[in-house]
Length: 67
Image 1 (cartoon, helix red, strand yellow):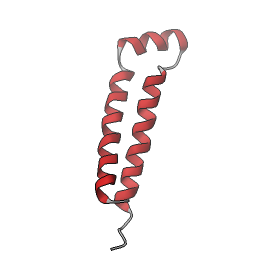
Image 2 (cartoon, rainbow, N blue to C red):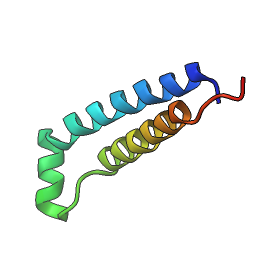
Image 3 (spheres, rainbow, N blue to C red):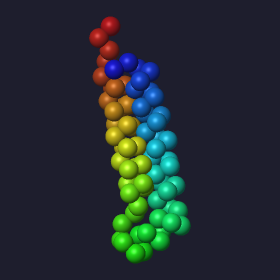
Image 4 (tube, rainbow, N blue to C red):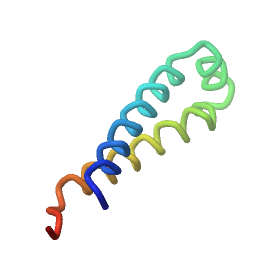
């Protein structure tokens, strides 16, 4: 994995985590948690995608290149 892709994954993951956190504290999510006890699917997917993308980017940056 090239370094540019790893950096893009890391930045994209951080952006997804930001939007997931914003969505988690929204009014519509508070209403959904009140009635169902869990956050909305959109929030869960944003946070999970952010974690996966961030980890993939970090692993890509941590593994030394073969050159």
